[in-house]
Length: 105
Image 1 (cartoon, one colour):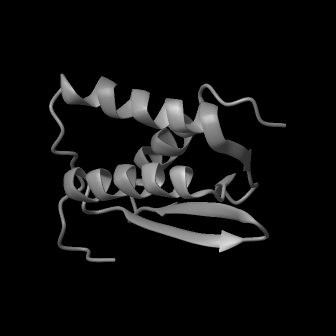
Image 2 (cartoon, rainbow, N blue to C red):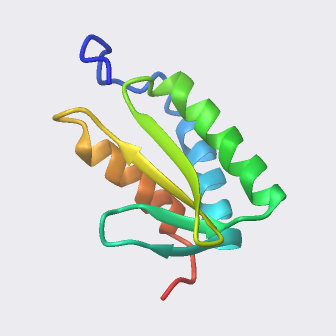
């Protein structure tokens, strides 16, 4: 993680709701569970992978201080969002956006 990157999102106030809606929609469609460590588990199909990678690419542009790790684990895609010290609430907000509309146990 690069400590020199500013902890700031470059999305405008008008762009933010659309991005959060994309995350909620993906969570609603494909989120399987949220692990205790905060990792999000999604269905591991090609469509889900494509949507998840597109969101991560977009988030990496506007919030370059965050790190996103996606890996296949036990037949699911596991997403972990890592934030530098002081930005943990932002990573938590993103994880919450994915889970906001999901029907997970």
